[in-house]
Length: 126
Image (tube, rainbow, N blue to C red; front, side):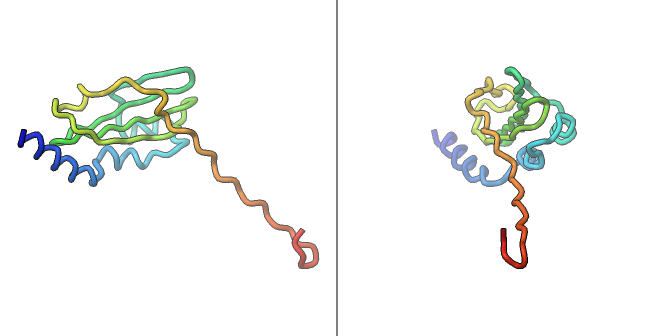
């Protein structure tokens, strides 16, 4: 019991540090291509698809905490990236990849709209 409690404390303390997987995944943004993803993260360990959406899963095994990343694609373009750290007492993260929960797919954010330029008529805004 003490060993599990110690493992949990160490894991909680270590979750503040971003893993290599998280750092690499953060460089991917909405609009990245599948080739960009493979270049940065390699081939996914698991791919799931639903209609025009795909979820590519990656993981990295740590000493006590495993890191997971899901790259969400829509119409063959990165829609979003989500990451998480989990304590997996069974060890190797590949064994702990979970089925994709499509309800957790991040909502698309609208691109920022450009402000309309102000026009002036003899020094007075129109």
